[in-house]
Image (tube, rainbow, N blue to C red; front, side, top):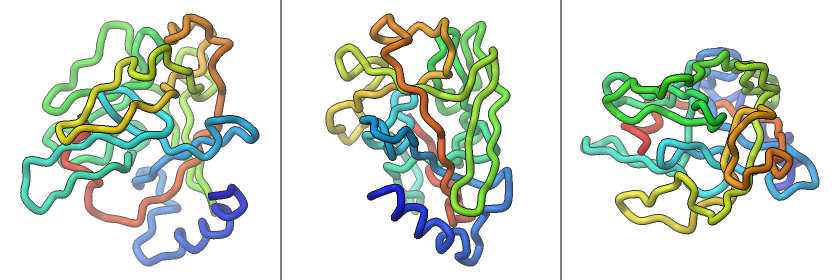
Amino acid sequence: MKFSALLAIAPLVAALPGSHSKNSDAPFSVISARSASPIHLLPLNAAGSYFWLGGNAHSYSPVPGVPETNQTVIAGGHFLDVKVPGGQAIYVDPKGALRFTTPHSAYEPAGASDGPFAYKPGASFGHWSYSGQGASGFMACPTTNGTSGYRRSRRGAAAAPKWQVYAALQNATVPSGKVNDCLGFDALAVSVNSTAPAAWEYI
C-alpha cells in the first residue's frame, strides 16, 4: 500500500468507536518509514525474542478463545500487548538489538536498557521512539543469513525477514559487523482499535 493511501485511511481508523489514538498508553502497531528504501512501510514484528521488519509475528496461545496472531501490538510504550501473567517487556540488549522478554520471565541480560521508549499519538500516525544510551530512534540491519536470532513458530514459518531492528547506536553489534549497512527509519505508530490484548504471548 502506498504511503499516500495510508495517510488517507488513518484518520478514518482513528475515528472508529473505541479508538485509542489520543491515549499514550493505548495499544499500537508499528510500520517503518524510510522513503525510497527496501524497508519503507514494512511492519515491525516480534519473533524469537527479537524484532524484525517484515515477516510475521510469532505468537502462541494455550487458552481456548484467545487466538494466535501474526500482528505485533505494543502497549504502554515498552510492553507487548499480551495477556500472559507477568507480561512481556521490550528492551534493548547490550549489543543494541531490540528484544522482548520471554513469557513467565522478566529476565533481561546485564547491560540491557529499558528505555526511555516514548509513544506519541498523532492525528494520522503517531510516533514510537527510543532515546536510551544516546540513541536516535531505531535502525534496521540486514542479517547475514536471513535467520540471525529468528526461530520458527510452533506451526512453522516462512523464511525469516531480512531486516533485524536495533537501537540507532554507532557502537551496536550488528549481524554484518558494519553499522553503516543499517538503515535508520521512523517508527510510525498506528492505533489499534481493540480493548482486548492482541495475543496471549509472543514467542
